[in-house]
Length: 410
Image (cartoon, rainbow, N blue to C red; front, top):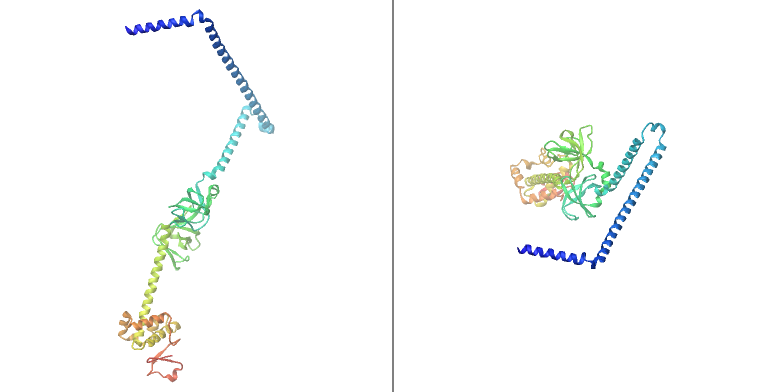
C-alpha cells in the first residue's frame, strides 16, 4: 500500500511540473524558441551531410574517368607499337588482360630485386677464406681451440659482434675471428666454393702412405670411417692424394675408400688429435727402438772391451772401444757393430765364456763408461784400426803406433 501511494505522489508531482513549466502560458514563448533553435540545427546538419556526400561522389567519378583515360592512353600507346599482323582479331578485353599480366610480371621482378637486395641481411651462412683457421671456445684469442676451418669451409652464423663471429660447422661450434670469414650476400653468391671431395675409409687400419705405393713409408693408419679431403683425383695407379684432419698429406688406395662430394665443414679437435696422437705414438716407439738399439750397441761394445782390455787402464779400454768403432766407420768389416765384432779371426774376446755374461752386465763400470764415451765421439787413438799386445808386436814393422798399457795401437 505504501509503494502505490508513493508512486501516485510522484506522478502527481510530474503532472504539476509539466503544467507549471511546459504547458503554462507564462513560459510558452521561451519553450517555442528552444524548439525552433533545435530544429534549425538539425536542418543545417542534414544539409551539410548531403553536400559532402555529393562532393565525394563527384570526385570519385572524376578519378574513375581519369584512370580510365590513362588506361586507354596506355592501351592505345601499346597498341600503336604492335604490328597489325600481331593484333589480328584480338578483342579489347583480351588486350587489357595481356597488359595486366605484364604489369604482374613487372611487380614480381621488383619483388625479386628487393629480395636480392635484402639477402645480405637474411643470409645466415659463412665461407672461410683461409686454411688453418682456429675455432675457439670463447671470443678470446687465448681460449681453447675446439676445431679448425680450411679454405671453403662453410656453416651457419649464430651471432656476430664485429671482431668475433660465433659459428656452427659440422660437429664444431665456437668463435672465429671475423676477418677470416665471408658473410652475407657475398657468401651466398659463393656457395659453389663450399663443396669438396672427400674420401672415407671403409676398412679397418687403412694405410696412408707418403707415396702412391705399398712400399712407401706410412703417414698414418686410419680406423674405419676416417674422412679425408681429396686433393688429387685417382691417378692411373689407383691412389688418391689426400689431406688428413691435421693437414698432413699422403696417399690412400682407392680400394679402401668411398668418394663423395659434400659441403666442406670444420674438423674437430678430436679428429685432429686422433692423427697427432698416432704420430706421437709412432715417434715414441721409434725413440724406444733407438734407445734399445743404442743400449744393445753400448753393452755389446762394453762386453768386447771388457774381454779384450778388462785389466787395462781406462785409457786402454777407451782405445780398444774406439778401434772397434773405427772399423765400423771404415766399412771394411761390416755395416753393423755385430758384423765388426763377430768378423772371423778378428776379436778373440767374443769367443770367451765371459763374453755372454758381459753382454748382460757391461763387464765393468769402467768398460761401460769407455764404451759410452766412445759412442759419444770421445776418441783417444785417432783412426787406428788394430791393436796387439806389446810382447808379441813387431814394432819395427808397424810404423806409426801408440802404446797404452800393454797394447800397441796402429
